Length: 108
Image: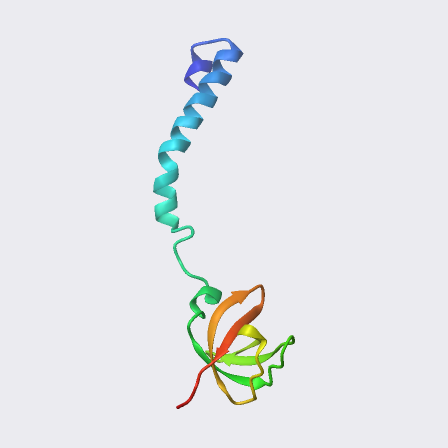
């Protein structure tokens, strides 16, 4: 705006705008990122890893079943393609897409 007020050529006004915008963006981005906390919180999917659940539908080798973890029903696949019966306790190892990879917990 100041460049336009003092009647500088249009090309100078454009370069002034681009340079000042770049400088302001460079210095204000970290402040905005900290204020908005972008990427700082874990999602529900990540927080479910390590949780213990109960099998609600039998998991058979090379196929999926269902597991209830933290009150939610998830499609699950057994680690190492083992068979896990209904009612067994399992631990969530990782998440692949919308499926949980689980391992049976030995109840001894």
